[in-house]
Length: 104
Image (cartoon, rainbow, N blue to C red; front, side, top):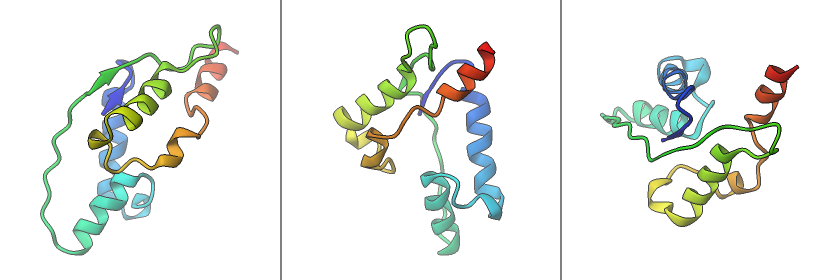
């Protein structure tokens, strides 16, 4: 898992909720995978590990080190990112709007 210090525990809570709520089964690639295991009655165990820390979007620098770090890890350490898709490399920053709303 790649996370900023402020959001990591909340993010884990949101992700694990998608494993319990049928309506959220398609919300993330991980939840899709977990639900496919459940559908096939396959037992699973999840071990969380923070692989890097990074700061989210900064409106003054217009950079999101969290997204940049995630993209770097997808490219350079693909064995750590088996559920990540290559299209995540071209996606825009999902933290930008939150940062801009905080500053207004």
